[in-house]
Length: 191
Image 1 (cartoon, helix red, strand yellow):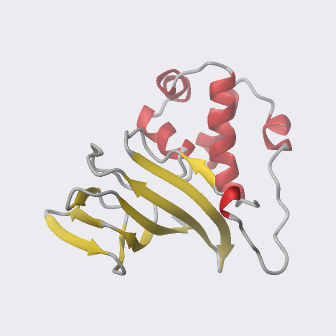
Image 2 (tube, rainbow, N blue to C red):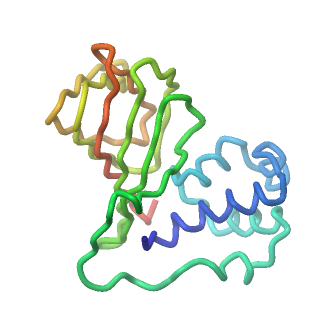
């Protein structure tokens, strides 16, 4: 499956960090940023500045050419069929009971679109999170309560929800059952 360059970079950083047995904290200290920022970059929740990206690559002790060698810059041509076996398991944040599978990602009109299948177990403990994107959710199964700015929104099967995911938000399963959503992240590359 062809992922957008930005998503490939986040995955490559995580891969190289783990290969070198470097913790998030150690990398953050070497770069001079927070552990949370490194985690957000690795999990495609934010896009690093060029200066931070180069600092991360240097702190990983990886040659710039080697880092970018495995990143594909080729655009997909024609229709794209993605079989469920091709979904890529990704980690968005360190949270037990929350599961993300990337279906696809692509660039449209200067915006990165990341399409993910999200499954939250019924009793999954969650913290407030934010993503450097706008988010569209379609509830496939179950019910989820969103908490954003002290407001609560309940999504049930068939409901859609669009919001600014840069704001801290919390999801909680409702009715004691797991929830499954199709999530579309819309990143503005200018931000």
